[in-house]
Length: 116
Length: 115
View 1 (cartoon, rainbow over the protein chains, first blue to last red):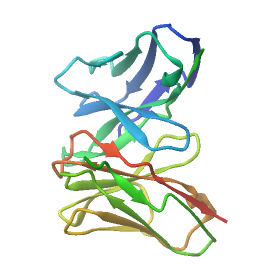
View 2: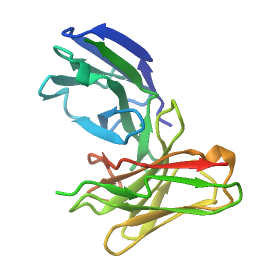
View 3: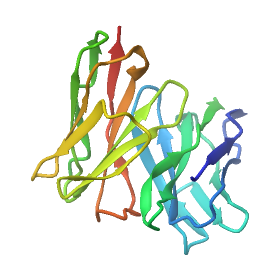
């Protein structure tokens, strides 16, 4: 069963810095990996989806990479802003016993604070 | 374009009661999944519905059941509530059924408190 780990658990940086959030997974036979943002008490907002055939995806100041061989994905946030403060979660579908995709397995998230 | 909508947003129940949560998927989506998120944890997969049938299920007891309607909306039912069922319940929709490898879009969740 897929296991997902996120490091660090929490991160506080001053506004304007570039930063990297890390996500590792145990099963390299993934279909895709998705990054989400969650504000306190709210639902999840999809940020980026990387298919297994891709190495990276970009959206605005966000760039996500995927390295299946090492079981790692990174989310790069450029020129951080206070509005980026949130919990960032990565997730990947389980590969079911029949080879099909199961529900997403999530990491516990990285709680990010951007200081003004 | 309406996103995923969930109701109610908050509710309080007592142990032993039953609860029903509702979800309308994003326009054009046909697959609904439910997740439970305890405080400080990542969401845990409960089950997935496609074509009005439960297609996949996570490690949750039979007290958790669901339904999908012909208009793709879905309900999550939890019977015999326990204190440990207190959590944020999230609904996600996607397109393409099972195996589902598409992008998931989540609602704002239903916060359940069991006293």
